[in-house]
Length: 299
Image (cartoon, rainbow, N blue to C red; front, top):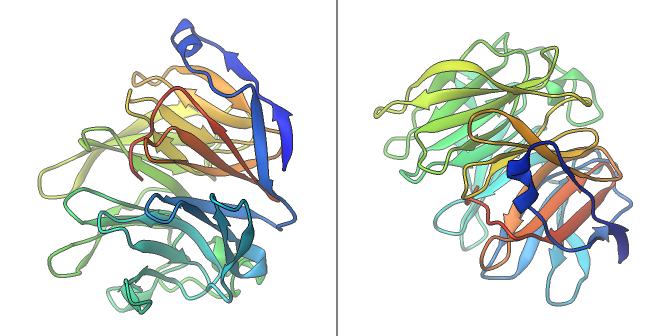
């Protein structure tokens, strides 16, 4: 396990209260492109994707060992853990969103919208009402590197919601170039969504209505190094976004207040551990972790 000196860059006084271990640990390396970290406290393990190698891997906290969790994985990208402790995954190659049940069987939550196959579901979150929200850019059908080259049946890249009562798939945002990471605010009244392809890459913020629709959509924050990918929110309402130089942190008012630098291009992050103060970061070929003095919202 390699150690890298931790560097928090303070851009605003509000970020000076964010810190953590002096050394960041690299838990694993040697992948082609890591993504979708999700932590399971009951088993004390982390699942993450190695998309081009068509596999998911599992890091065991008790032993420090990493092994194959699933292969083939359907070129799985983003994951989340639902309130029942089940793994929910975006399978780029199979162009669907699935859930693994306690007995190991797989339930398909969404694979078509109005009879047409999705492009390649990318990232996913669950709201506390049980609804599943996911983005559907075209990365998995653009080439054979992270999926299977194909023409888009829908013809555009949207954001969707799966109703927890009847499984109905609803289009909630249709004005994105390449929707990517997404995360709810602490009280779930707002939804943050990344548009990776826009120039500059940015995060938009929407108000969530009582019936599960989205309104608004103004730009919340822009990227100044590469593009944004996965995002998460901490309990203070700060938004953490994966970018090329590390994690960018935004205050709830949209001000970029600081960065956590990482030696590889970051794709995503999650909070783990029993108190959600263990930060796990997927970046290029590796996975990193450090304990921090703030706590993440489940996602």
